[in-house]
Length: 145
Image 1 (spheres, rainbow, N blue to C red):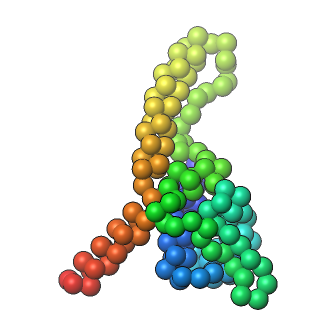
Image 2 (cartoon, rainbow, N blue to C red):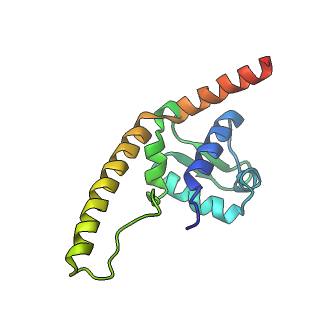
């Protein structure tokens, strides 16, 4: 199964956008993320729909944060991306009438559900501001070394 890195990439892009202090075009973001501007626009559309970013077309246009970094959680971004699958493992649906499959699926679903709840709680507790400050700390420590 291919890894879905949209969450990581959008966190990266949004922190860079904050550092730019203005608007970033789809082309600038695409170059930063080594992807196509169409992919950036499609991905950012979900963030715009959820009020995390704003866009302006035309000369001087582009994407800008619609909220402060401290007001955007990882959960906000995860949800705006359509809640991509967290796990590659899942339930079998080959023989739903099979009692063994039902028992296995019940155990898997309970465990995976608890894991999703824990991840969602952690995502809700971390803001982009937290990540930005972590970057600042790492940068300061690296420069002093």
